[in-house]
Length: 298
Image (cartoon, rainbow, N blue to C red; front, side):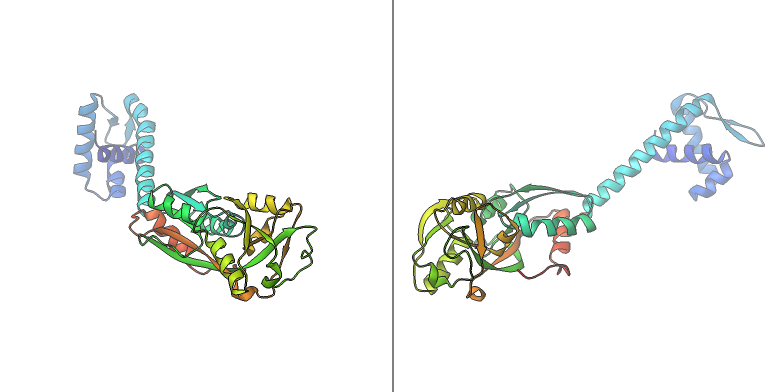
């Protein structure tokens, strides 16, 4: 039994007329009649009662019609589904993100993708620092990352989404909680820093402190932003963090602006494997790499 035969059968069954069915199918009546006879021979039962005035379904034809309609609809849906996957309109992307990007940038990305590619499924892994995200991309554990450049792996491409200033997180009762402060005012402070070697935020903060004339005293280390903030709330140190942290309210923590913040910044970027052939990734990047008119500089 061929799909063509089922389509011909449904056309005749719905029109109850071979001539009108042939017109609907844009074929001559002779090959249509021949295809129906072949189908009846294969099934071993007549499907139509033919008279000079009308065509009616037999009991076998009545039984076949809903199944034929269902099969054809299923095939059409499968063809459409495959086409949408091939075009990148459907699919699944695994996305990794740095901890703070989860609060400020990931919601914007999800909103834009949901609006333009509603058939795209996203699976998230968060609270990873940039070095771990690069490794996850290289190991094919994620397909797209929201991280902080520079990107060291030459096999990865990236697109900068935003530039953020650094802000100071201090315990609520800290002497500097009223802000704003200068970096040089932090020379005698204990710092809570990211534990991972190569942390982009940690290196940016250290460079800024050295430019202000001192080396930050790192007394506590954490591998997640939530732990950094918990340690600040506990009063064991201060932390320099990207302005995305302003979206995170933590009891016992105050955020303070820096007077010299203009020279203390870090970027947020999308990163992906250069050789990744996924149509869904290409479509997602086409959406996300366009400027977002709703975005506001940090």
